[in-house]
Length: 142
Image (cartoon, rainbow, N blue to C red; front, side, top):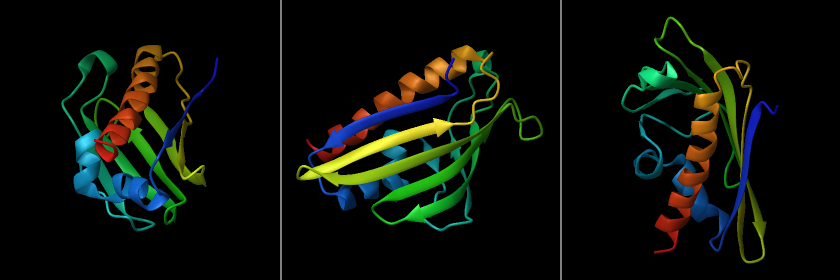
């Protein structure tokens, strides 16, 4: 079984427009979660949502910006679990933007799932990322 999530979606928009939705905290909140993201390598930030006890998740994702190439690549850590003192997920989210066919191909790779036995959270996140990428597409093109 795979231990990563991988989705690719084409946007009929330039990379800079798509990049804004990946790096602007207010726009990120529209399609993902409340956050205190800043596009600065080394910045620690959090995503916050309602707790999901069925997934052993307290509603807080602890992240750190690991790599950033404007309009091309964004990488951050993604850690969570039932509490800050007990992280059960320690993974990496990588966004890659490629200018292509008068638009942008956006690829998401979320890897590092060590506890695949937590299949419900993996399946929920796999579908959630797909839906969230489609939300970005909708916001950019309506």
